[in-house]
Amino acid sequence: MTIASAASAQTTPGPNDGDPRLHGAGSSAVQEVVWDEINGLPIAYLPVGSGSGREAFRRITNQLPGQPTWDTVQFAFSETGTSANELSQYNMNVGSYGLKPIQVPKFVLPVALAYNPVYATQDGNQYRFRVNPAFAASTTQINGVNVGGLRLPRAAYCGIFNGTITNWNNAVLQTANGNLSLGDALDTSWSTVGAPIRLVGRMDRSGTTDIFTRAMKAHCDAILTEPINKYDTNAEVLPYARVAGAADFSSVRADTPYSLSSTAPVAGTTNMIGNQWYDVSTNSTPSVPGGLASNPQPGANGTGLFLMADGSSRVAAAIAAAPDIGTTRVVNGKVGYIGADFIVNAVSGNPNLHAAALNRPSAPGTWHLPSAAAATANLNPVLPPESSSTGSFFNFGTDVRDGITMARANPLSWYKVLSSMPAAHTGYPITGTSQMLLHTCYKPTNYPSIRKWLELNIGIPDDRFINATTGLMAQSNIGALPTPWRNAVNQTFILNSNQMSNGQRLGNLDLWMEAAGPTPDHCNVSTLPGETQPGM
Image (tube, rainbow, N blue to C red):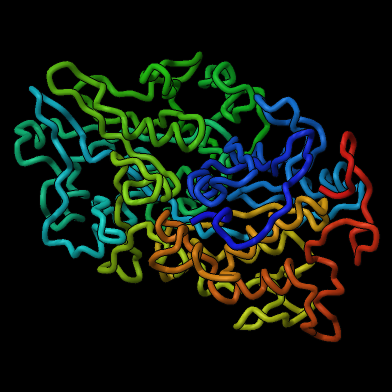
């Protein structure tokens, strides 16, 4: 059920850069759930990647290829939080017209380790990964739908995504799955040849990559000692060595960070990037100059190098593609990280994308699938900035975590408080949030739709989006914000709240969104170039 079905007589948005729609850009990880939510509304969303979405948000000149009339966006999505430097650019560009930025988690996003259940074909037969039939349905199904459930303990996925476990017949994987072979019962070559593990990653600056690399850094340092963990930090870019002779993908995507000319931070400098990419138009894997091949030779193990794909939809297509290496026995074996709204059970999921079940060292017998409930459980222990246990305004000016003062008035704090999520002891372990970037002041014609959309995602006036069973988000494997977060978002960004803390009235911080007009409370803003109304 979309916003369009809500009982409200909305004004038509815009005009925004000459177009009567709200404009948004950013994360491709949540593109499916965003499109489902806005279906039927005058809202356009471009899944250009988190980095490009944040860039469009902080500028008033066109940053979006294929949309020459878009100079501004009314919202953006990013799994990576905006930075102090990016906020300075916003204040210089957009802020000069009187607008202020908002950064708030909107979706709790589990990142699936997704694989194709068909790992090979031979003589007209499909060979499928075998999931132990003794495993409980809770570890192989989401909402009653089989989503796979091959078990990958931390040592296994750290080895796979560091390139040290390169074949699906590895004994570590068999042991993790109840000592049952992962190979199809009809596959007589499994014990000797198996199937190569082929890594698939994002070619663009990706917030999904940021969540994934943050988890790999946090989870794998203690497990991999020799060879060492290749993930030195979290970043929107996988481990990549920008040295002479490295693979350079700028001929495929001009703004790719996998280029010798890019300065985008990387998750590590020990290279994990191969020189091939998935071309969805030809269902092929052409190469770029430099580097080594991502694809293995027929009969060989995986290379431990990522095959690149531009955006989440192409990552999904690459993994879901039919086996393509070999002649008689043709293998696939791809596995990649992707927002869980792309896997088989989701509203707009791909039937050829299954997900691994993951556990935690603290509870090795408990296995989690990337479901909405398991994602929300990961965020539950974390409180919003300056909040009580219920999300009420609290500890104004005195909320210090890890030596950093968190403040509701600081957009950076709404992301920084999430830093403990990878180390959480509950829920699905590779989870982050998708931040919605908004403005405090909107045109009178834009404000009603933006407010209504945000309200529905925190359960106002009903739970059509956030119901744990029937809600659109749950059906897309996207977690809803826990109750304290929903309360904090409502009181901070939607209402002119009377809540008090240490002598400060929350509403007087002027963080709540408002329609610009003749007599605003705090939206005394100018009209942007080319527009006819003040506000965004």
